[in-house]
Image 1 (tube, rainbow, N blue to C red):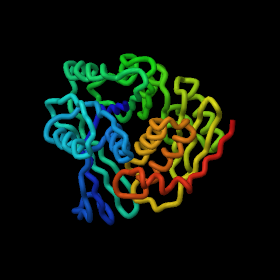
Image 2: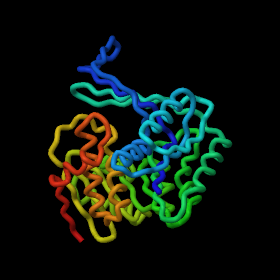
Image 3: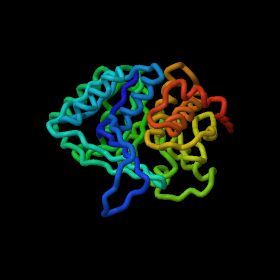
Image 4: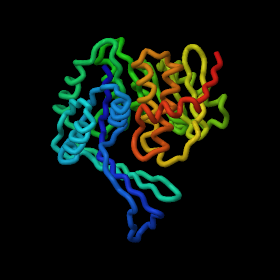
Amino acid sequence: MIYTVTLNPAVDYYITMKEFKEGGLNSVTNGYTLAGGKGINVSKVLKNCGIDSTALGFVGGFTGDYIKKDLKTYGIIENFVELQNDTRINIKLKTDETESEIAGFSPEINEKDYNKFMESLKNISEGDMLILSGSVPKSLKETIYADIIESVPARVKIVLDTRGEPFKYALEKGVFLVKPNHVELEEFFNEKYNSLEEIINAGEKLRKLGSENVIISMGKDGSILITSNGYYIGNVPKGKLVSSVGAGDSMVAGTLYGLSKDMPIEKAYKYGIGAGSATAFKSGLANLEDIENLLDDINITGKK
């Protein structure tokens, strides 16, 4: 079974306009809302590929009800802890020139809520996959992901996709896969990387710090998978960028799809590239047909 954890979900409000004028009245040309959060996005793409998962985390208020209803429409199982305050609303703004995001204020999570959440992890057993992704609300400790890892059986495959101190503490506990992007990698090591070699070396450092495998996404320059067998470089297939929102989460989901089908991680990585690209090339999240349509355009070169 696959479990996704979203500690800080949101109702994402996607709006499109030709240009944004600060301090003036702006007209929206298109707008829609979706249940958002990195773990939730992973669950959705998995479902689009025919793979079930259980979504865990916290929701509250009318926005929390919206998220639960949205997941029910998808047919996704959820076991969220319900909070007293409303789940946040995020704004995803796209103009002809730029993409911007505004992250909403997170609801308070008290000790009782936290204990209920930790109780919800008890169904996770050896052989399951657990995805820990997204930001950590300020009312939770920065060690929360590390605490989760310690609370589940040792043979659970942990996928970690977050940043900052929560990433560092969790990495120390040992994980199966991490997926930083180029910017997050530089941020973590407080360094600038100007070559592929430097990025690969930084990825190898992450392996030594506790991740069995590392995927580094580099936008239009493709991505890199680093394993104990060497490194693999994947290109971006041809397509027109519509929106990069959710592309990283889709990459995680596509890789998980491959792993759930018993593919070696090098082959599962190709599905990850396909899923991330397919989401970037459309309004909404990738499905299996979208992914498979891109596979022939994805070239992976490896070096051991």
